[in-house]
Image (tube, rainbow, N blue to C red; front, side, top):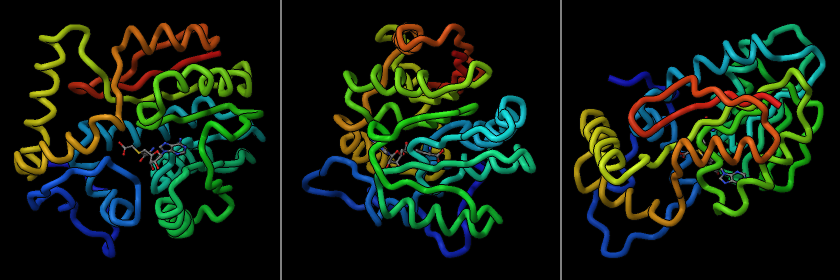
Amino acid sequence: MVMNFMSSSESCDQLYARRQDKIDSFVFDERVAAVFADMISRSVPGYASIIGMIAILARKHAVAHSNLYDLGCSLGTATVSMGRGIAERGCQLIAVDNSQAMLEKAGEQFSRHGLPSVTTICNDIRNVKICNASVAVLNFTLQFLPVEERLPLLKNIHAGMLDEGVLILSEKIAGSDAAEDRSLMELHHAFKRANGYSDLEISQKRAALEEVLVPETIAVHRQRLAKAGFSRVDLWFQCFNFVSFVARP
Ligand code: GEK
C-alpha cells in the first residue's frame, strides 16, 4: 500500500510488536534509526507524496548559491529530494539532526545518491544559525520541540531567509475540536492497521509518543507562523491528521 524508502540492509519496524510492561518515552536512537524508513512510510499518510513534492517546491524556489536546510533530517530523505530538484544551481544542502544514529545513516544515503557535498550537522536545530536560505524544510520535526520553543525557532528561520525563500512545514495536527480530533485519529489508526501494525503496536507507540510529540491545530500553526514574521501561509497538503504548509517571509 505504501511507497517504501527502505534499502535492502534495512529492516521492518517491529519495535512495539511485543507487549512491554513499561513504555519508555520515544527516542531517536540506533534501534529507531535502523527501522526508520519502514516506520515513517507505514505511519505517516502521504509521506511519499510530501517527499516527492519537496523536490518540486525546491526546484521552484531554490535561488542560485543559496542554502537549503533540512532541519530534523532523520535519514536525509527530504535532503535527497531537494538535491534532485536543484541540480546545477550551486546551492548548499545542509542536513541537521541531533540524533547521531540518524545522521550516520543519512550520510550513507547521501553517498548512495551521489550527494557527497551535503553538509551534515549533528546538533539541536535550536542551535543552528540559519543564513542565506531559499528553502528550509521542517518535515515532521517542529512537533518534537516543547511548545514554547517553537516560535523562537521559526523566528530564527525567518530571520535567515531570503525574500524569495520558502519554509516547508509538515506536521501531525490536532483536530479543531474533540470530534474532528477523534475522527482524524481513527482514520490514522486505520491507515496504520492497513499497513500491518497491530492494535498493540499502535497503542504502545502512541503511549511512547504521548509527551514527546505534541500536535497542534492548523489555526495555531498559522497564528505562530504569522507571529514569526511569515507574511503568507498556504496549506498545500493534508491527509487525515498530517499536513504540510508553505510559508513565505
Ligand atoms: C524526514 N524530516 O524523513 N534538533 C535536531 N533534530 C531533532 C530535534 C532537535 N531539537 N528534535 C527532533 N529531531 C524527516 C523526518 S522525524 C519525524 C523527521 C518523525 C529529529 C529527530 O532526531 C528525528 O530524526 C526527526 O527530528 C523527526 O523527512 O519521526 O515523526
